[in-house]
Length: 299
Figure (cartoon, rainbow, N blue to C red):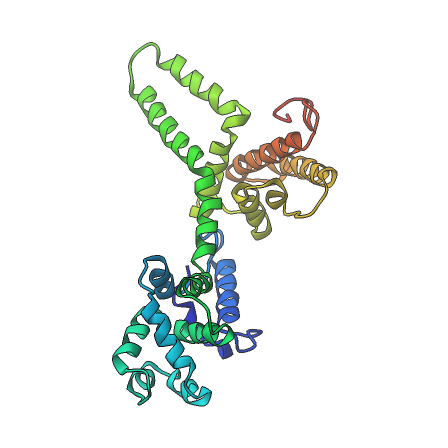
């Protein structure tokens, strides 16, 4: 997360046009591009506003304080909002103690946002202000990202941990049944439903730097392995089913060729996983049971 996004100076980011949130979003996107693949994404967040609006700290009294600030002369309030010292030390109709409390809950950016909301809709309720401020904190976007990246893979992560533990036990055991247990695990991992475990392993290898791929291929693997719906995973939102199927098949062929002809052994391991991912997506989109290479595995 890019916390304290409200402190980003808009003039320091090209294309922000003086808007703090645009500047923070642009900066976060640049940081994500720089840190990939070790970081899946960087999202701007105003942590103080997120905390205040999600813990019930914003009250009706705070709304009344915002109303009092909104009633001040606009130029005067603009000067007050230049710094925390000016905001709390200025002589005005809103008591200094009330302003200190607002500053502790919202900081200058949140106060400005709250005043703008009151001025735009004088009859707005405390609940509506809280929701609008929550929206401007960026926390909802973080939650959505966590849901898509981690919650969607929760079962796969738990299964991977469980299988890892069972495999370790099988290797350590001296019982004659160890071989049967090992074979059963291998058979389970060979099934289409277990492919997400292989994908998680590939993503881990890439994000940790254990295996390196060209930047464009790395981004493709991250997209295919991290998305939730098929168009997003294929990078083709709005495409028809036939277009998606055709693209998945072409990329399946490409990754299989790369694994065989252009990859190092470590890269080839990931390439086979990505090939399989595209093949399974192609099947979901209506491809033949036999697959791109004549068998389910595409070999």
